[in-house]
Image 1 (cartoon, rainbow, N blue to C red):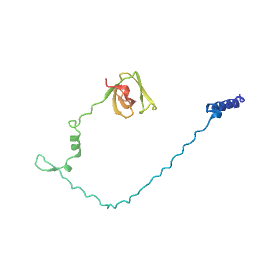
Image 2 (image 1 turned 90 degrees about the horizontal axis):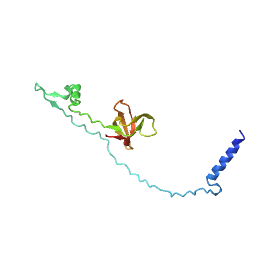
Image 3 (image 1 turned 30 degrees about the vertical axis):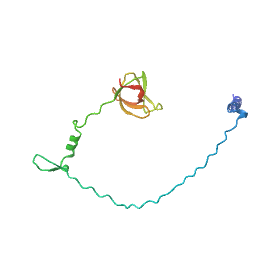
Image 4 (image 1 turned 90 degrees about the vertical axis):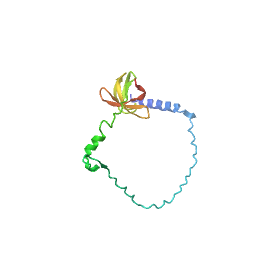
Amino acid sequence: MPKYIPLTALFLFWAFYEMSGGADFTPPVPTPVAAEVAVVIEETPQFVPDVPPEPEPAVEVMLASYEDEPLSIASIAPSTMLDTVASPAFLAPAPLDIRFVAGDWVNMRDGPSTSYQVLDTLPRGTEAEVLDVNGEGWAQIRLVDTGQTGWMAERLLSAD
């Protein structure tokens, strides 16, 4: 067996030599690159005094109450203000972008590329909420049934 190793090595060397052109091989001639000269003109910075900006005048907002006594914003409890701003009357829920898997068995991946690990293989008609779409044709989805998130090619999702 050991006598075949040098013989195999010689055969491989000869094969690569012939595949690269053999005795007719001529290396490419490098083309000269013209030297580029950059001229840098430095401007002297102009003197700008370091003056702090003047503070803006304070604005006091007064609210009327039942007793006709003015109330300042500081006297209102922060939780009351938060409840008023974040109440459902002011915030309408954003519509969900629900789509369906349009392929027969489509891979849902851990990231926006085929180089990422396959998390699950989804059958046609599986409902998924589209969370994000990147500019490279991949959509981040959350499965409606299980809540599992992953990435899928956007072209494999349909609205109906």
